[in-house]
Image 1 (cartoon, rainbow, N blue to C red):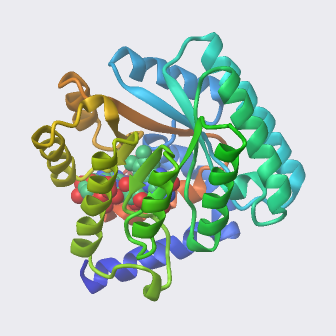
Image 2: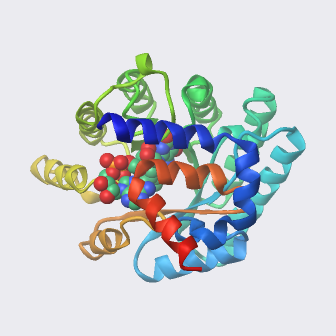
Length: 309
Ligand code: FDA
């Protein structure tokens, strides 16, 4: 990544945490172009999009947007909404699980309360034979997130997994331990602003680590989601699996709503399991800014929409 792109990325990611800018964006953002990456502000809108994806042979993971909440009453509201979502998915026979963020459930405020909320959601998912993915946030939360997943599994609640970020040096060890415990993982490159000593510096190194982690998982035969829009890594995964006799039922590809849509559809037509991450809700701003930071061209798309209004 060149220095200009790195600075641009870093400036945008700093904006993701800015509440004042966030408030302004909420007033205008959906019209400005956030709707390309966010399925709507209500569950009805998001479930409609999931129905459309399912009709094309694409599974979903539903994400009620929210993170870094300021009081635990918010976490309780989010928990109740997730439980309702799981019931609606079941009732409507949709092919979708759910993804949630630990700080949305109060991890930064009260880790014990956060665990209790997530446990309730996973218990509901287990009852309905569904699944909960705990997204991975920035590195201050990595240890606690992984520990929660181990604890849930130890309590017999196994329909839960988490995410490992290839940009972190520590991920190799984390993947090894989580694989031993047979935890379903989503592998990603990583989307947050992190201190330099924790992460690989170059994209080539991140890509090489991503492939290393994918290989460990495929070799071990523990179900894995390869979550990337990087065609080179997708092609590499397909080839590695084919050459090593690993059936396509042991892994899936995941991509974000509104990103590389033709590629999602093509993989599904080829017979691969594809899952689309479908975010919705009123708190879409930090999610949206991370998508801008991943690809500067997205920002020009949004600015162009604004100009053309
Ligand atoms: P990379 O950034 O190298 O992009 C490869 C190509 O894909 C680009 O050339 C571009 O064409 C296209 N592309 C990538 N991002 C795009 C975008 N936003 N808009 C348009 N085109 C784009 N991270 C995290 O830290 N914790 C998490 O829990 C998750 N969860 C998660 C779930 C799912 C389903 C996905 C797909 C991703 C995440 N991520 C995440 C985000 C992840 O860490 C990473 O930031 C993005 O996926 C972008 O990286 P790529 O692997 O796509 O490759």
